[in-house]
Amino acid sequence: MHKKIATAASTAAAVAVTSGIALAATGGGDDAATAAPAGAPTTARSSSPAAAPTSRLDDGAQLLSQARITEQEAIAAAQTAASGPLNEVDLEHRDGRLVFNVDVGRADVKVDASTGQVVATDHDDSGGSD
Image 1 (tube, rainbow, N blue to C red):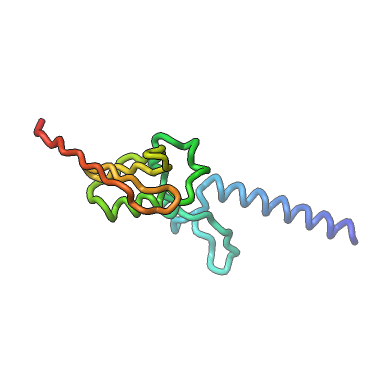
Image 2: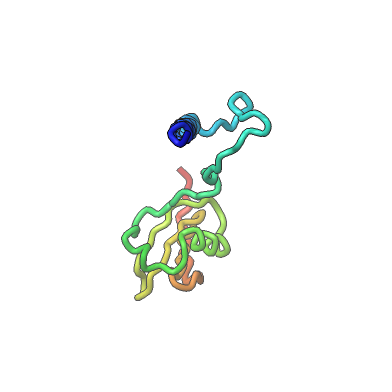
């Protein structure tokens, strides 16, 4: 009797693992054609790519461990000082402090990597037509 229970449990575990691999390989079946029937158990999914912003950090990745704020916090602070499209972000030393240099529109906004405060905004005044 114990051998039958152990065999059934092993088979159920193998089916569960195989099903999980199939779900992961197909993206988890978000659309109606692959949706699980009503009442079927569901699996937990990781957050969507929209929830995890991609990094715009161009230079200074080796300095990230020294920053006390995140790249996203630096971007948010920079967008309070300048408007326009968000371009690249660098992490660098300026005037003895570590700053995020965030390109917002035609401005380079320097955000202190320890406090999150905007410490400088340099505007690109070259606006000639092509």
